[in-house]
Length: 175
Image 1: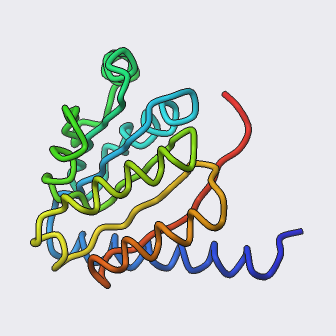
Image 2: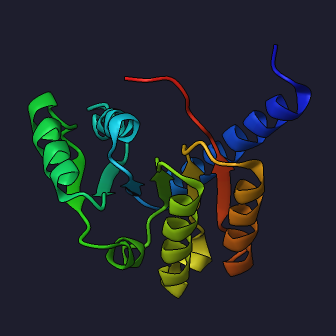
């Protein structure tokens, strides 16, 4: 059974996501999602996100990044093979600064260590253009990291703009 603290965090995360998606869909027809970390877990999650439903109201601008260029190429190949949604624009970023400068609405990370999560989130949040502070960016960290690092990342993101948010959404298991 889920603890009440865990259940309330999950409910708060869903509320943040729903509120942000409603504000995007009412103001724009493009949702910008950036995904960082295309390892075993991240690859599958990113492919599922890129396969947007054809009847979706908004266009998805989907940007991926991984330090390992072979993972980027593998993702692009698999995305084409499985057939990404017709309303999806797929691109890869050459580095985290380029990714941040695209002013994503959502950044999803799937990284192997606490140190990697800190480095990636720090680089992105410090390079977001000031225009993104007007609308906010939601960071969804699916990495399995310590509670202390998760709290630190949340504080770091909030210190840049109160409109930015951080959701700790660790995954476990295998592919």
